[in-house]
Image (cartoon, rainbow, N blue to C red; front, side, top):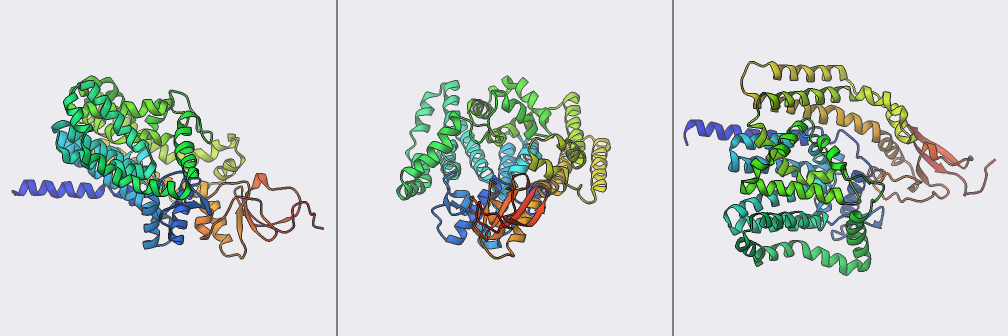
Length: 520
């Protein structure tokens, strides 16, 4: 290998390593966010403590929300590194990093190194993927499986080779083991639409009739499902398949509703600061339709957005199931960007940095209008992070330097500015938001861990308190002598309790007398 190609490979390797920084930097700086992070973390802790690797519980009760794969990874991290926030988030961070690496390699092999660099950079510095990639939930692992499936299916559809198809079956099986049927539905529907649009029926028969691929998928996913069904019977079917899959599509669960245009509003927020690139992807879709791989990516994005727009339950992160195809399609647009699109990109970066820099001041001033008394108390009393003026000033200076730096390499300057926004978000704003929303809960839980007696959650759902206490904390009314976590605005009248800890609407009490008995 000559010196120039060898140097290029070293730079490429360094870039792939740097992609992991936004996901690993200060991974444990924020408390666990309830409800989702707290529930996944505590369920994984209970699996680790019990040694029962085939079943998940939350505060001792059966938990059928998700399959088992992510709990295995999080329980393994807890066993290796101890009960820390960063440990339970580490599997998601590594999955997010690996997906960015895979996107870079795929983009490079399909459309050149510049597309690979941009696709991975867009994904690694986008707001939605940063948040999911640092959360102890199942979504980073699921998106890794979906992304690898999409890229291997692209490879198979281009040349018909069986190896990528069988790898895609492996990733699909792992996805089904991570979050259920959605991991099969999205790639299956997209492949069907692709064959329908291309009319390659002979290739369709070969693809859909590959017995080894189906065998791989079933061998990976089926054993645990059969075990869970055999162990829990109809309770597993009703809890997992019916309630957390079919019911989610047919009706809004837990208040997560939205109109048909929900994702048209959410998608630009998830892709900050690169939201301006969504419009050229939409406008120039015909240019992408002619290519085999790009058509498949367009169909994947279209199906995800249409399917979840029709779903009764809508959550922002559902749109991220299309993050890999979108990152590649957006990268193809940005490498051809003219002056107008470059101006849009710089504007988006500037607005995003300004928003991140001003957020700790703006939120406490506006939260007085919130109807929820707990969140009003939490946010209005949140202190600005230390060194905020210096950090905000350095971020703005970095962006200014990137814009004015005397070089014609737009890509390097823009991606550097994007990296600044990512570091600003994860190293400064994210820990501040975590302490504002969850700091009082964590401190109350840690204070309770030094006290004798059982603890319960009374009228609240904060599963992270069990993680911090290191024992189950069920949701029920406290008995005499028990500790209870409760909201300040829901404290019962009377004097039958003692306040142990109180901060920003979060209260830890001890029950002193039976219900109905009034102490003198």
